[in-house]
Amino acid sequence: MSKQKVIIIGAGLAGSLLAIYLAKHGIEADVYEARCDMRRVEMSAGRSINLALSDRGIVALREVGMDKYMLAEAVPMFGRMVHAVDGSTKLLPYSGRQGEYINSISRGGLNIALMNEAEKYAGIRFFFNRNCVDFDCETGEALIENTDSGVRETVKGVTLIAADGAGSAVRMAMLRGIPRFNLSQQFLEHGYKELHIPLDENGGFSMEKNALHIWARHQFMMIALPNFDGSFTCTLFLAHTGENSFEQLKDKESLRQFFETNFHDAIPMMPTLVEDFFNHPTGNLGTIKCFPWNVGAKSLLLGDSAHAVVPFYGQGMNASFEDCRVLNGLIEKNGANWEAVFVEYENLRKENTDAIADLAEENFYEMRDAVADPVFVRKRELETKLEQTFPHYFSKYSLVTFREDLPYKVAKQKGNAQDKLLMEICAEVEDVSKIDLNEVMEKIKFIS
Image 1: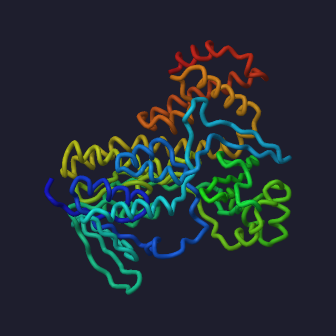
Image 2 (image 1 turned 135 degrees about the horizontal axis):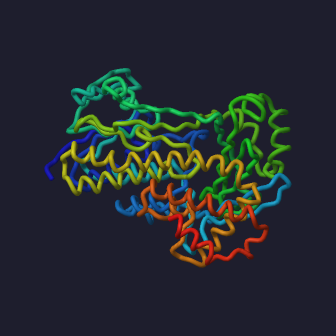
Image 3 (image 1 turned 60 degrees about the horizontal axis):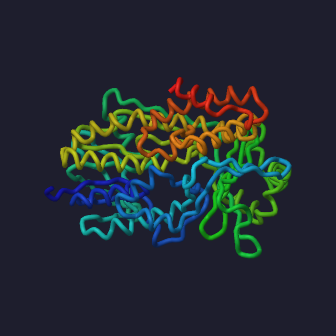
């Protein structure tokens, strides 16, 4: 393949991984990032939300030779550790099969590793503090502003790929410049705030390290993911307004009372709770869907710029990495025929990213409400037994998380049908051990 230069907007996870894929095809890329180089500054807390790296993302990292390196600094999570109001805990395994788990990984650490790997290729160049302020759908030119000097320049390559996230400037330019461009933005009434659980007094993990911890309280919740250094990154999900909301937590006393009532067991582990809460920003949670994703051969939206999702299935990064993997396969198939690549890419990915966006919203209500529901707990127990007994059976969660060969759309359709059936079965029994597993599998075959 002859030398070409692609413009990538965004040096985040997807943009950096994409640069590596392109370099392996001998395609040069200039990557423009609005933020400063995170390798040169201390990263601030408050908006990171630990990432859950699972099979779809791992496969993409494996294709560029980064999987073992990154997994060496990840913490395996084998299930959800549910914390009740009275302080009791119960582990709900993610899978009944051996070797199936998700990995808690640092967003910043992964991003830095991908940028370092990309820069090993002579044809990859990163430009930081370079904000894309506009894109011309007719010429394919991007307007880039140096955020230090305010100087603007126009850049153009053989094509442009936008990996500039949920607030994508390229997507907004396409909205203005393309007739019948469809855009949907739906925000939850809930926001989030990042908190912190440091190492315990012995320098180790203060809770079970190999689990995603969740304090589900029906209308709100808190989760905690383990960090490699022994600490936990916590995220409080709470309505912006109304009862039990961020607007009610205005001072130290109201915060203390709220946590005493709802997360009493977590307080001793959070010595910087007050400082973290009032110093860290409150983020929004939303879903973005749009179409088309491409303008001829001039540009393509990829990752969150095309399909931002809420974080409740742990698939945002994994879906974006899968985007890169699918795009790479189409480049292998079609070469640098960008128009053919982009059209086939968006037709393959659109229905699947819509599916994971819907699943992520559904899982928000499951995590917030259902994990404390006895019927749901029995359903998870039944699913675990089914996976232990029938290796070819996959729960909805496993279909999404551990079947990288299965499109999200199929996982959603099959998984939701299974969920409905198993919830109906578990609503009728108090003891899962009395359920005939063979009979359940026959019913599952019928609905599949």
